[in-house]
Image 1: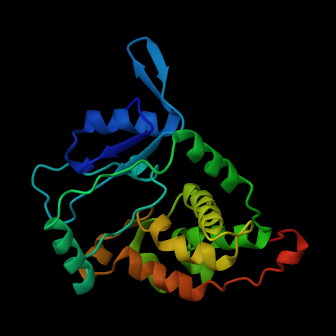
Image 2: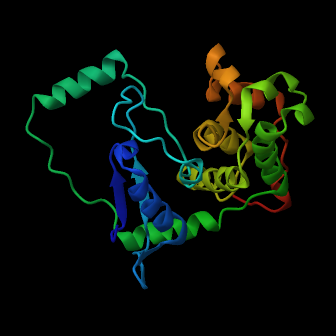
Image 3: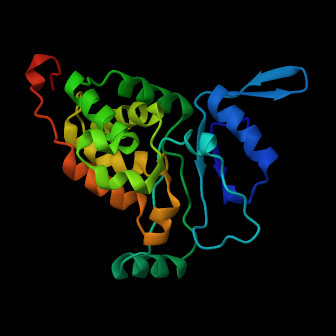
Length: 230
């Protein structure tokens, strides 16, 4: 784990003790071995993969660890054109991969994201989306309550805002708009709440619930001239 980028391939094949050790380093940015504690490098990023189909020989990730991941991005099957591109590339010699970013440059980008302006109304919108998964009755969605055992934690709200900041920076803006939050909402929240047995029995998915949340919670109109700037 003493690296800048850790790829945990098929993380759900790691036994509980390995997952527990990874949980510490993801949360505390340090590793404890016996009586000694070692800090990991900065920046430190973790990307993990899971096979959604195969279950034999796998270990479910604890909710506390899943909550440490900023996003869960679902990778579906490719469309025809993209799959043709993959096939064509497989017929050629392997590409000579070149480094495009240094660790220092990444730290600069992270610092830049922290400078992106977030209006209070945008933050309130992010909090409302997360809280709607915890208390759907309070947001005029009583029909969702039987399908959710546990809603998104406050980390959901926090990461919604941070992910929206990063998206705004990538798009060349120094301020966040509500649509930034809306666009990252599924990736940030889909893994942060626990579906009930009733939801599993009826085929209700996290994305389906989030579709209803995003439709029901009104998108605020933000006057960026008050403090954002371009």
